[in-house]
Image (cartoon, rainbow, N blue to C red; front, side, top):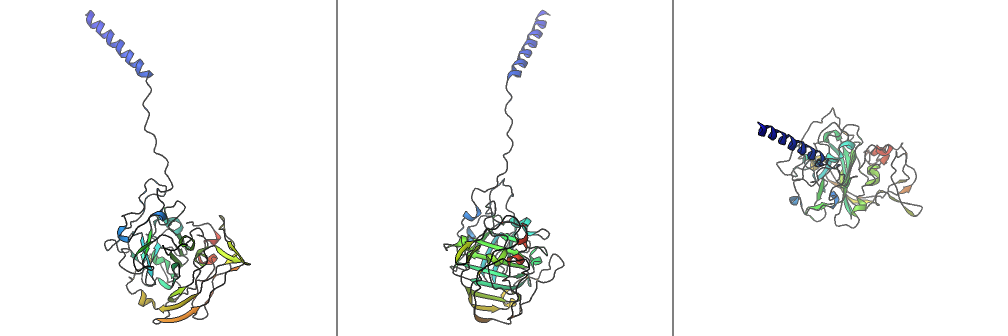
Length: 378
């Protein structure tokens, strides 16, 4: 009896001591909260190099935990990915009958909100991408210069899932967070050495039923300047000055343009600075480079393999139809003169008197609409 009582007291004392010791022990640290999401990738998109399309990984953008999320599509594209629901983000830019534009994967959102997830729409099968539907392109000028190749033209943008009335945005391999727009989007071209090379510097404006896409020679010393990406709100007329005409399909040779944003006023070379707020005027008109040896085509001869696809909305075609009847050639076009002066919001576009076709040599104020507001960014 005594021994039992004593044992009970000893157990009680031991428990009390254990509790007292436990109260003096510092609790183990809790698992720290996950770090805040980062913005920048380990390697910027424009610094990534791929020898050929065959060397591409499944996704070029492999960073995780970044603010904009993961790459939307993929870069290994072939017959298994081809079709109008493809999420291929590998683009090709070869010739007037073989090039791609960036467009939304689905209809319903403005370009400025989804630049990071755009996918490739191409004019020729074989790239594992979506195809630009038949009849969407109503005029294209392809230009080859010493330092870049460029396509400028007119399009029924609803057929590549861009909202009617959307003035669009700019895609390039940089973007504010260096992941590019679209994220992981890469471009290849065989226009320079008759073999596919990665085009490191490029830009693509699309919206307002018009587009321009420039791919700068990856071996050229000034690729980053000709394919500048900081003038995202002043459109094709300033980033890719041209003489494209709706209803005309032509391939030309041409001189280099001035670097975007650069112009000469009273003999002084000046660089334009794009303001952060609304743009109500631009102090110069971009010089349109001279072109020569232009060959014209019919739309049917260029894009015979494109599918007929109904638009996602009640659509009408972009203004103009192909009017050339076969392949012809013409000699040269004059060069525009870069002039100082204030562009105004009354410049709705010029008209070509030789063919009655409207031209794309129009003010960025009207072409890309956004010159009046800060609705989209690179």
